[in-house]
Image (cartoon, rainbow, N blue to C red; front, side):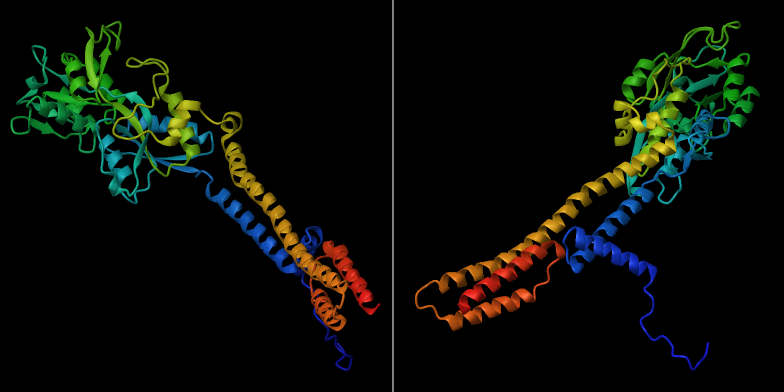
Amino acid sequence: MNPNEPQNTGPAPEKAHQKIIGRVLSTFTETFGLSRSVAVAAVIFIIVVVLAAVFWSIHSSPPRTLTITSGPPGSSYQRYAEQYQKILGSNGVTVRILPSEGSVQNLERLAERGFRVDVGFVQTGESVDDTRTGRPLFSLGSIAHQPLLIFYRSSTPVTLLSGFAGKRLAVGPPGSGTRTLALILLGTNGVTAGTTAFLDLNTDDAAKEFIDGKIDAVFLMGDSASTQTLRTLLHAPGVQLFDFAQADAYTRRFSFLNKLQLPKGSIDLGKNIPAQDVNLVGPTVELISRARLHPALCDLLLEAAREVHGKPSLLQHRGEFPAPLEHEFKISPEAARYYNSGKTFLYRSLPFWLASLINRVVVAFVPMVLLLVPGLKLVPAAYKWRIQLHIYRWYRGLLRLEHELDTPGAKTEELRKRLDRIEQSVNRMKVPASFASQFYGLREHIGFVRGRLKG
């Protein structure tokens, strides 16, 4: 660059975004008849509403990861969780499974503040103080029966739980629902730790020691026992399965228990196992969630539960589960809606993530449009009404002045000064282009009255 050449000291070129803003403001001022300040306010309002809708849409999207607390490896709870994992995985949701000791530990995890878990399997009859979480826990419904199986060896059948007093009993590991229920029922029959040995062995060790004759009876439930362990004990020679002859009395005393029946020969028809109908008692298993569980994930979980638990089995009929049976925990509002009407139209008709996206767009942006359209209509109308009031105000003064001009003895000089003040005020008015005809019409009428004053 030649330093002797004059340099351009004029204003710098306008930036692109400033041009865009200027065009937007011009559109508002010319289309809606707004002043620049009102147009700026309208644009800011629109931007705030749109940003709020976008933020809500992103913030309300269902998480892509779900954490479920299950049970020991091989337990029915673990199998349920793995089946849920496959079903939810096909819908783009990653399920993280946390093994546990069983129902009690699952409930403790759900109740523990800060523990990262969303749902868990919990048997009925257990509860926890939800003040520990700062928010309530909800049930998504009951998903399966959970019978208590008591295996024992005896030369004569044991018909009452009190018959196990003074024996060596494996009642399940700490944290399992098996141990909780076993101790409740044994205590009701007067069987306490003072006279009876309660062993907290895990299921595999308990089954091994039972078969080896080191313990007298073992209490098992699906939350802590594997299918293989149950099958081994059911086929073991000399092992009997306790028949709850007082099943009706137990269900009357403990409302969370159900009477179940294992039909004769249902385990093995060829070997006739069991040799007679066996009465059992047990709670149901509930799917418990925290209050913050996303509604879309609630629907997915209940769809998975219907697929996993809706089939007939030895202890349930087809379609019996999942069911909105309320016990210690209230059925969540979203689960209640699902049981009443099923999945919404979008989730029935479209893939999960596409339905979720459309649902969020509808929920977020339709109200936004419903808010903006009346707002955009109201602002120009209010502004126009304000401008018209100003114009009408000077018209009223002009009409009054002209009326006084026709009055005999009118003071022309005083009227002329008043007209000058009206004209000066009108000339200082700032009106949008849409009011140009009214503005110039007012000025013409001022000129008309001035002409009459001169005449």
